[in-house]
Length: 328
Image 1 (cartoon, rainbow, N blue to C red):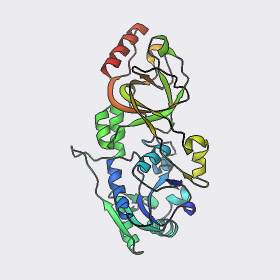
Image 2 (image 1 turned 60 degrees about the vertical axis):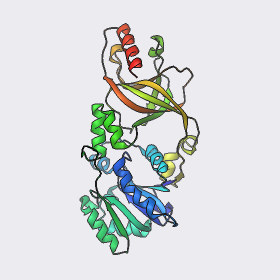
Image 3 (image 1 turned 180 degrees about the horizontal axis):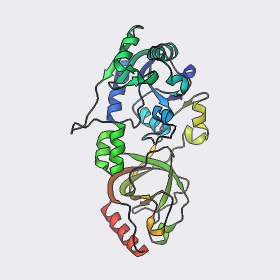
Image 4 (image 1 turned 45 degrees about the vertical axis):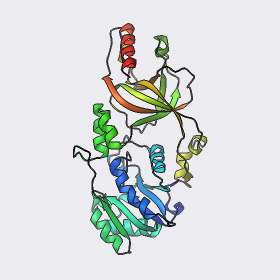
């Protein structure tokens, strides 16, 4: 897949799925599906066009924790067979464009759109003045068809949205998160050196450093599965791969995971029993031994076991960890 923030470097022509797509959940996949159908037997690029940073981050001036930071979003889109990800720099100039100018200058002239699909709640242009229907009307002036996808709901008639997934993660409702995403929520990061307290009490852990922009679930203990990322890909070999997106674009290939899923217990929190201050993510792999320092792990959340808790002694903590392992 080709990733760029420069429309001049984008592959053309394009069938475009347009939106923020944070999470690549079941609702997003429903928006993306029409371009997969549209490009069969043609030379058009199956392209997702989104914004970076997230518009809410631009207007609030505060960094937004994402369900899928750039690398993870790229991975999920590649697995859906998307050819290209265009990350439009969301700045003052883009934010001030009126709907007509956005469609005409960016989608039509620069990206050579041949087809566009959006969700029915899509808004664009200065002060979010443009609606999905406006996009349809403007694009029709250039002979471009716009597909408007109805909002998707779950079996309980709950709208599937990034906000609903964040709320469920804050509550530790992993079952609902999995249903809304259509897959398990994952945390990916490099194993770094910790204080080795777990090893001292008989439960060695891998301390994982995740992307600082990744949305972290409720603090507590989780039953998880751990996947080892074994194949070095472009973004792992090139330390400045994210910078290159904004200067020339990059070719991206998703990680190939080890076929082995290792059962584990993960703790997210500050470790109050030992008066910890910094939030950490530590994983204890069950019935497994080996050196993981420097490895990249993907942790798949299976179930929330219990909230963060302060114990009166290390022995109490140790006994509870035994119970957590048995539950996992």
